[in-house]
Amino acid sequence: DAGVTQSPTHLIKTRGQHVTLRCSPISGHKSVSWYQQVLGQGPQFIFQYYEKEERGRGNFPDRFSARQFPNYSSELNVNALLLGDSALYLCASSPGTGGNQPQHFGDGTRLSIL
Amino acid sequence: SQELEQSPQSLIVQEGKNLTINCTSSKTLYGLYWYKQKYGEGLIFLMMLQKGGEEKSHEKITAKLDEKKQQSSLHITASQPSHAGIYLCGADRGGTSYGKLTFGQGTILTVHP
Image (cartoon, rainbow over all chains, first blue to last red; front, side):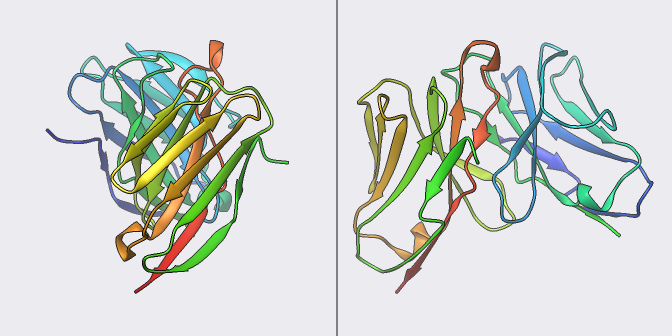
C-alpha cells in the first residue's frame, strides 16, 4: 500500500508570493496533520484535519490555511511568503484523531523562499 | 525552554557499540512517540509508548517510558551504519491536544563502520 504522498517535493518561491502544498494520506486514514520543520529543529504542528473539519491549529499566523477534501487529501496554503517560511513541510496521516494512533509521515515538501 | 528536551544533541559511535538517547518532558505525557529521520526526508515511525513503565522493542531498538519522571529512553544495541540518522521524540498531551504532536529538537546519530 502507498504511504503518505506529498507534492511537489521541492519548490522555490520569492517573498510575497503564495504557495499550495498537497498531501494524499494512506488509504483508509481520515486524519491529516501538517507540520513545519526548520533546519536543525523538530517539526512544529500547524494544522490537524479530520473528516474535512479543522480539529487543531498551532501557533502560526493567518497567512497559513488548509483544507481537507472529501477523499481525505489535503492542501496547505501559505500567503505573502516570508524568508522565514523556508522549511520542510511535512504531512502526516492517521486513521482518526485518537491519541493511540501513530501518525505516519510523508517525505515532505522542501520550500525555499528567495 | 523546550517542552521536550532530547539528550544528547548529537552522538558519534563506533559500529557495534550500544547507545541511549533520552527525551524529557516538562509537561504530562499521554503518549510518547519515537521517529527516525534521514536528513531532509520524512519521519519513519519507530514506536509508541503510552503506559508508565511500558517497554517496546523492534529489532535492536528498545524504548521505555517512565511516566512518573516524564522521561523516555531509546536504546540501540550493537549499532550499525544503517542506524544513522536523526532520532526525534514526539509527545501527545491528550485531551483536546490529541494527535497534535510536540517534538524535541532531535538527536543526530552517526555510526562509524
